[in-house]
Length: 362
Image 1 (cartoon, rainbow, N blue to C red):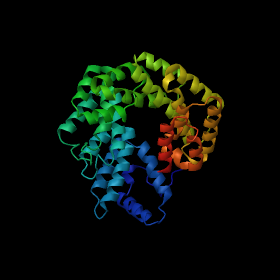
Image 2 (cartoon, rainbow, N blue to C red; image 1 turned 180 degrees about the vertical axis):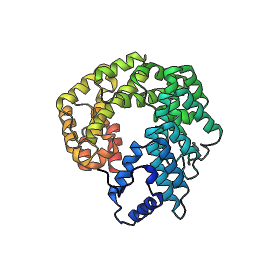
Image 3 (cartoon, rainbow, N blue to C red; image 1 turned 30 degrees about the vertical axis):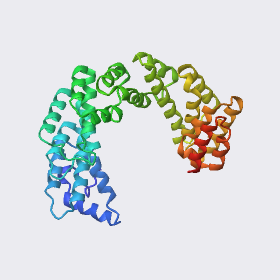
Image 4 (cartoon, rainbow, N blue to C red; image 1 turned 45 degrees about the vertical axis):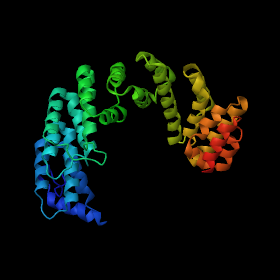
């Protein structure tokens, strides 16, 4: 049955009591967890109107620290975003307590949800907010707080329906924001890979296009097999420079993930990587092999295994590129300087050997 000590709807929530409980919790007093869990449950179950009313009552609270009020409203707006992202954004941007920049991930996620269901209306609303100055607060680098995530969602939606408009929208932004949107905040679907590559080529300076394409491919393909990587470069008509960057960044990310997961690549996985690199970028294959194993061996826990893999490969096929690639990673050089020096002394080119030793000894 119902627990009559708990609120049965959001209308019954005593928001002042909740805020005071949160303040006491900051002072290490344990709040009433049953009440907190009940409120969380109601936020997910109740009608949006009830949640909006609770947010308005929270904004009207007095004698509550601004930071506490902001956090509480932010949580409630986050709950509203799950129910009605459009309403959540309207409430958030009308609130005097909230700062879009400080909560940009929560609000931009709501915007992405809205864009998926009503792209035209959502983008029109966003443009109105920009025109009204809602994004005028600035970060230290001069970019408007929160705007990158919103622009990314708008451009991605337009890329699916109107690529020309997506291109025009990006070109209207400063170059650094274009780069940030495409390089950091944008993960296209595989179906839009060609349109996305064309968008990069049309909006990013020529000398930076390969790097931005590689960044996107790395995020999109790191969990796919090498055949998918080859298919992607062919599908987008990658130039030799683009293919080299895409292959390199994606392979490096795959082995970096081995390090994050503390899961050593098998001999078979290393051999498969070498075979793939020899087929795709033969002139960089050995150095990328070394760099990839370095990405795995960055941590103290993985360094010895990474070193043994490099040692085994080098004894079978001695070459400087493998060693230089491995020792190029500063965090690897710093794990065990004696071992790093031992590897560096195997480099046959005196100039390259001296350069690597100098870095190790810095």
